[in-house]
Amino acid sequence: MRYAFLSDIHGNATALEAVITDLNKKDVDHIVVLGDLSFRGPEPKRCLNLIRSLDASVVKGNADEWLVRGFNEGEVPKEALDGLNKERDWTLKRLNDEDLTYLSELPSEMIVDRGQDQLIHAFHATPTSLFENVYPDETTKIEHQLMQKDEADVYAYGHIHLPFVRSFHGKNVINPGSVGLPFDGHPLASYIIADLEEGRHTMQIHRVPYNREHVVELYHQGGYPNIETMGRVVFYGVKP
Image (cartoon, rainbow, N blue to C red; front, side, top):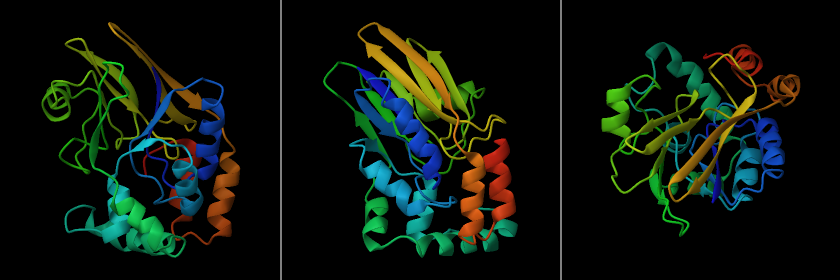
């Protein structure tokens, strides 16, 4: 089976379209989307429509949860709360009740089983949290917080916007990075293709160019409330 793993699109439909176009050349059997679909990008509605057209397995991210119910105390820095609420209000004006119901009903984790004896445990941040950061060099946290289901062969998550592949005890932990808002200083859209066979795993990170200038212009055209910061993230691939 050939799987594609996408995560953290964040309303960047231009980047998502570029990734889908790239995937169409790769003979992928199934797509797994690891959350954060619409919030903080200029085209939240179009992103949802594109994702729903993929017949993919999709899990919920923290940004999806925030769109549905807002920010709980302690989830974001106090100094950022006002700006994030303005961004959320802007995004909600471009979504309808059906969109929010779709986001609210997404599972927080799932086992992806396509009948090939290769099980994937998919979640956004950890199996028990939408918000916890687990970074590539945090071996103990990876083993204890991510690799919780012994029956899984691959553990796939997003959230940190940093692509990597690591192997533990004959299994793989993967993060495809971010389609819409990479944080690793490499602004091209990021995703992973995994070929899974009995006794053989092949994982490859793909980076896809797209028209970043157009995305920044869409922020401006839409009157997005945090244009300077988000434009910098899109154009340079740096964390806000």
